[in-house]
Image 1: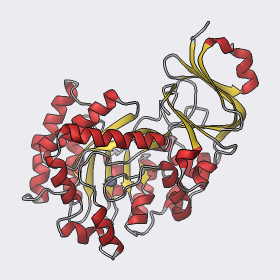
Image 2: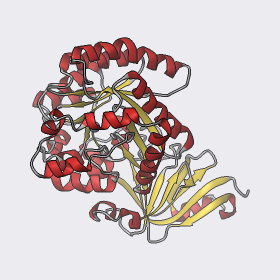
Image 3: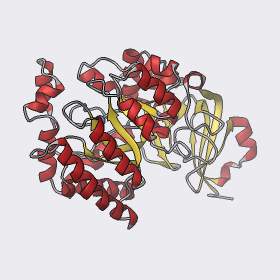
Length: 424
Ligand SMILES: [Zn+2]
């Protein structure tokens, strides 16, 4: 029957499934042995979900070509799952290109922060920007992320700090969720920095007493859909006690815990996250051995951010040690005015070169494990029956080109598909 199925991707040289048994995440051994089929095809149904994967001949016997709305011949090409970016700050006004020059001249993140730059600069511009202006720049950024293969992305607020601007950012994220093709996981990050005129305890009280009750109300009446709560747990920002209070209060209103920890100083953030049942913790350049063990047993994902360590010249997170100790390792771009990178292919490349991950590990970290970090791996992060049909097709006969080629992925990625619909 014509149009019974939405899309057939036919006869790919390689089809990278990632996994085949509905795994929610992969540990080191699984990451090293990704499921890849040669000469394979994928069928996406009307509902936008994967209906069948298999060898091209088997799919040809099972489905008549006339039953598809669209067929793409993938001969000589590779199909991979859409990439998942587990950590971004994409809603803001006022770039910080001037600070890049300062950093190149030797200023540290905290030097710039204390001089009134950094987050405060962006907060000031974001507070002044209209919702429409924020949406337009955000939309453009999401399109660039899609073009680089990202089909599911975590998006944080956190450049408002006051309730009014935080809600403005969350409404902008909500608007994108409804109007655009990208899949979005929305994060309230009101504790990204201590706002001017308050100390950390006052800011913590404000968040718990004013911000979170409002979020709960708006989430319940469906005006916005916030999934995660985030805090920048760092010396001179929110200490361990403030972080604990905010995350716990967030959990109580039903948000998943997913926060910044152990980045510039060892804070015992990893231990705290494991104790509170965090879904994920990001950064972890300064994680302790006890923190690694705690995250492994709590099944708390480590979202590593190679662009930040690279641009701030921090020590690299210990990816190899985390993998060896059984931590679920994921990747994110950390796209923000400080680390202006949209591209998960470049993030994977940096993870391989600077953090010594293999290409298989990096791809698993940027697909199934990044989806797990957002609590979405039941529908995203691999090409399996019943999962959402989010895929990319690259114009190359080996999938590793997606990581091997540093930059220029817009030439390599020929199609980006979300729910079986060709977006690019
Ligand atoms: Zn971040």
